[in-house]
Structure formats: C-alpha cells, structure tokens
Image (cartoon, rainbow, N blue to C red; front, top):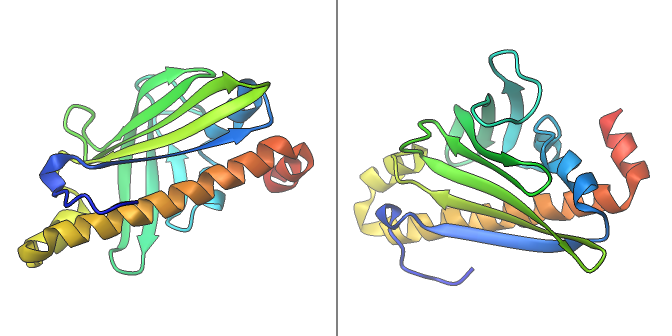
Length: 177
C-alpha cells in the first residue's frame, strides 16, 4: 500500500485480490461461511449470527468480536447489505446507512477459476480508530495509513487462506472438523 495522505473523512479504501483454481460456487461457500472467518484472521476472534439466522442474506446481522494489541478488544454488529451468491457478499459495520466500515467480497469467474476480491472502506461514521485520532490529531494521516496497511495485510492473508481451502478440499474438511 502506498502513502496517500488520506484522512479518516476521506473514507479510505483498500482492495486485495487473488485468482483461485476453483469454481465460484466453491469459493462462495467459504466466503459466505462467517463462522470460518475467525480461523483465517489474526484480529477477528469470533462471530455469531443474530436473529436466528444461520447464513448470509440481505438484512441478516452478525456480531464480530475482535482483538488488536493497540486497540484492545471490541464487538461490532454488521448488517449484510448485499448478497448475490456466488458473486457478491457485502456488509456494513454498525449502522448500515452510516457505517463505521464497509466490507465486500466479489467473486468473478476467470480462466476456469475465480478471481476473488476483498475490499473495505473505512468510515464515514466514527470507529475505535477515531479515539486515537482524537488524541493525536496531528498524526491522523499516519494513523489512517498504518491501519489501512494492517487491513491490507490481514485481507491478503485471508484471501491466501481461502485460496488454499478452495484449491485443496481436503484441507477445507480438516478446518471444518
């Protein structure tokens, strides 16, 4: 990720992608399995569907519990705002109309496999990062850059893990057991 000088109000974004030697339906099954995500993330610790849901659909909600050495532990409620199997899964964190972040997986058939993209946007609503910015407003651009770079690193690792699971179904069975 290159330095952009972005501020929080700029709603900075990051996107990573990978090609996976598996059909979109197989990749979708992994992307849509939010219970799998904590095992693929250093920050996300646990997830739980709300309102009796057991899978993604527009309007479905889930709680994510996260942990970060500098930011502590927190929980957020996410709202599925777009769900088109096996193409797009997107959610807004906290208020869907004014989220603290937006996240999206996009799957596209490509060369007998799947091009998987993960994208996120920080803001526009205040998040835990806002408190760090409040304490050090002169360092806002650096704070935002470091956090976006952390997201990029985490997202790259998540996509690599999804690729491994999709391309090696045996590994996928081992993880789910």
